[in-house]
Length: 380
Image (cartoon, rainbow, N blue to C red):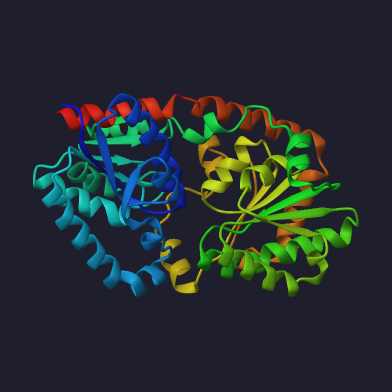
């Protein structure tokens, strides 16, 4: 059966990116299909009708979610009612498990086929959530190869589709071309990525900018580049830079273009999240940093099973790059951790080799594999 509604529910900017590529592959296979749901700008550009924008779900941290919970519950109830009324051929929840899994379970119980794209981090915390996934999704689309055996052992239908970033990012970065695109040079050139959410920037950016100031004092020729994910965050970063005078005059703020910033850089300071994987795919020495409200930190640290939070270390199953969290994530410690790497060429070469192996393991025709699994679920 061709045509009809294929519904997507993306929860943040990374979900928008993941879903957009799949929408293009679905349209190639089913030109009569209509796409709608909760969408971001990239999904909208691919023809997805946004009943709500992805910004409505972009909340992170336990304390922050608690404050927003009544609004999020109302939104989910409205979305569920609309989906039950529209009766899509399939509903694809893209990441955002706290929002999507409950929604998917309710829809699936009502007879609507469901796919969950990007497994929750059951290998890191909340292992019991795989039973929630079992109830919620007819099929799970996996982006990391080590997840497939976990789902196979649990008897949950799942398909490894690779990570789309591994195909979008070149195997060999072109540092010179990226610097020319940005119009920035430096020796060294350091990129700082403090996150794409307001709360992340508020808690993490001061430490990263302070670290840039520390690096600048030790390396007078060093230059820095900071991508801003939105106009609001650019304004906020401008204000924070004014409070870090050792970094302000050496730092270029860039609107978006985080991949150019990563490709151009010699080293990276990065908030935990998808950007750590991007930095690894660009083969960069990095320091992974995370800070959050103390209540959220108190809850999170009691739920973890793995010794790492950064995707490069999780994928390698060892500590390839430093992780500095909460009080340990202070400017002197962050600067020291990055400079130790940059001052060790043999270590940097070894990192490039390990990151190249990770890159190869993640390369698949992700949009095509995901589209085929989604359409097979819809037909069933």
